[in-house]
Length: 477
Image (tube, rainbow, N blue to C red; front, side, top):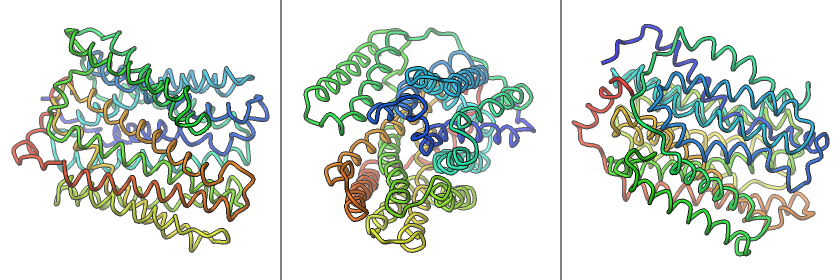
């Protein structure tokens, strides 16, 4: 068993900051997009790929990042991920053309795909010796993800308002360098284990996930029943089926299929997918409502989302960990998704002539509480049952699930909004009607998640619940 690190809480700050920055990278560019479009010559349709290039690379490569973390040691992979993220940030900041910008964003996504699963493995190593400490650490770490996504909008608004769009990428350089410098002193050396990388499996699953996300984000523009969308989705299914065949055939697969026999893993991942499928569309369309209906600028719009960020941080750190220890994961996931559904449903009642205090703040705070209740229990359920040597793999799976669920949810809700006139010359009333449809759809996704969790998630046996966190501190965790 690894010795308990006296600097583990300082190390947790580094890991939580890394999670915060990786997730923030998906949202910080939102308010800067118009300036980037003007300076780099993006078409209206091509502008979305500043966001999509990161999400596709991040979601498509997370499984590979988890496998590399298990094989080569989490600390080394964590450091390599930050170096790659810094390089991608420099390229994105210095880009003078649209293709270079997209390439820089994809490199950033690759770095994030290495950082995220390595961070989770290191956290389990540092705190797996004590279930109570692990719960507190997971609360802070878990709060960093949704807080990063929400805070990115605010910080992007601040930077765009008073500096210029390249600074949304430059900000990652000093933070990344400081993180890399802190690694030797704070993070434990994580020995890898002998093995090989399943190159064919990695290529198949990465291409399959990337093609699926590519098809989904393009479907509202091309049409869900168009030949291009159907061919792209069929190709994604074929690649993912090939991945499963490869996993059965090779000696050291990227994702041993037996991992899915782990109690709670499949249902926890389903809950994470539907949580992302409700939360990200809510955040996206709430930002549009603030700007396009209420007339907020970049900075006021970002500021309006700060109460959600503060609520998430306070509730996850101060409340969720205690409730998790008392009631277990399943009741909290169900309650969290139900509360999230109530909050998003409240946003569906927003008015064309509404106000922040009445139409946005109360419902958004309810949604933030729901997210706070569900996120950490779902993440811990996905991680708690796996063997220590598979913690990087499990982290890669659950992060991939959340990202893909987010992309699918956003694409579907965008299609709903578009069908109700969001892409046309609609005034505040027409836009509000379109956004109400998206909020209603996101609330339905959260309800579906609560129902499926109630029906299919099993409570872990007491012996498992006690043994698994302790096992996570074993070498190679």
